[in-house]
Image 1: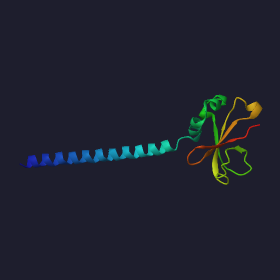
Image 2: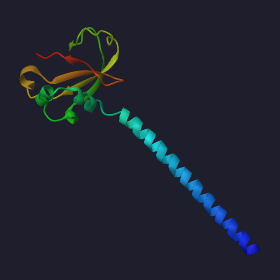
Image 3: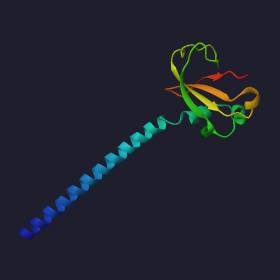
Image 4: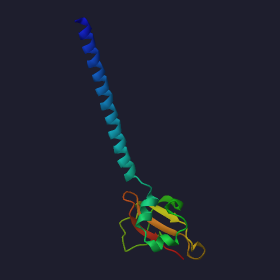
Length: 128
């Protein structure tokens, strides 16, 4: 009889350990998925802006979105930006993305301003 009790206790212990391990792994996967979602939301601003460009704009850029350079700047009235009168970003921090242009020698690189939260294009740098 003692033998059966020991076997039952051993089986219950193993099942409990297996269940604990399984639940712990599921929690790690869920956290990983959540961080992956956050990571997706935090994609590279260059890639998100690139997807918003027209095919004509993309054809002027040398390389791909990975060749762009990102900096953060505070938009002021003096910034050379073309946009349909949206002044709500003046005084705000924005991304400035500089894509190398095939027309660099004549009119300069493609400069794009983007919202720091949404990565939406808010304007373009004026070119000579």
